[in-house]
Amino acid sequence: TEPSLIDQPLIKSSSSSSWRLNLAAGVLIWVFSHQLHSWTQRSWPPRLLPESDTEFWDKMQAEWEELARRNWLEESDEQRPAPRTVSPAEKSYFFSANNPYREWPNAFAEGQEKAREGDLNAAVLLLEAAILQDPQDSEAWQILGTTQAENENEQAAIASLQRCLELRPSNLPALMALAVSFTNSGMQREACDALRRWISHNPRYRHLAQSGRSLQGSPATPRRGPRPSTPLQDVLQLFQEAALLNLDCVDPDLQTGLGVLFNLSSDFNKAVEAFSAALSVRPQDYLLWNRLGATLANGNRSEEAVEAYTRALELQPGFIRSRYNLGISCINLGAHREAVSNFLTALNQQRRSQRCSHQQMSASIWTALRIAISLMDRPELFQAANTGDLDLLMRAFDMCDV
Figure 1 (cartoon, helix red, strand yellow):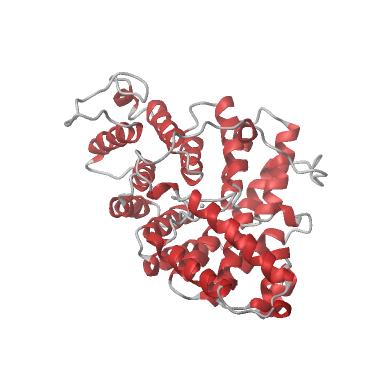
Figure 2: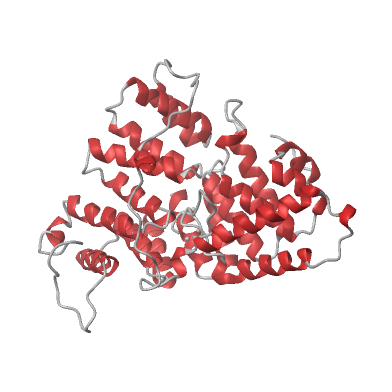
């Protein structure tokens, strides 16, 4: 729906949709379905179709069904089931076991530095250590949340940001980041609530929320038509009214919120305008470039999305989520080898820290990698993709472990 919607194009596996890619308006769905049908309809002699290949396709079928099930953004409000509440697991943060930085002095400062450098795995471990040393440090929870989101770990991001806001409810950057993560996770109502809270706590705009408009409160301006307004419509109206207060300037944070809301309403052209406006003020913001790219991808503008993702990666080479999104757009453009290269690079970046296990790598990236390999018609690599043999795959594509 990160695409990871805002942060990612809306393609989601069991752990993803960094604002994830909605599979480029169905193009990727059709391509993969066609490929899957082609392979399964071949007249394979029993001994020429290894069990590992059968397992590969069974796994791909299951993962694809999961991707389709979670393609929530393309559904209308009437079709979409009632949004689920945040589960206890999403409210709890699970710390890494045997953290070597557990007693590290200055863990928070070093974690911030590692995050700026793009070494996200080390940053996460250092930030976790800082929080274990001081569980009431709201800023450490905030940075951990945004770092986990960049590292393609949305559930951990949500848990971290929620804890940050329990400690400091008026933290505006954390509220905006949480809205993005909820959006990427297909949780529209929660995303709208986070954005409403952002307006309510913002000194420049809080009077708009206090004028009688809230998600559960009485309606504000009467709307035309017989149907009551939705939470999305209410919050979008709040942000649009706030934008009217800034006719002589651009508030990049407000425009970011508008970009999120327009993505949620599938108005991708307006979302592009909002993120572009934010970038006019913050041209070096790699998160905004990634969100612009994901929005372009959601609007079936993959060529432009590639340019935006590339700019994000120029500014932050260690940005796992943007690397993943770039790979998705490459699939949509038929550049399957380039897609595989980006997915392998992202996975290798995730494991680069010797302390990062296979389980800490993103399941969504592995899913996308298997799809790309299937589209390349490389059956000899199915077993490696199915078992997660990153070294073998990198050798197969002549990639060095740098």
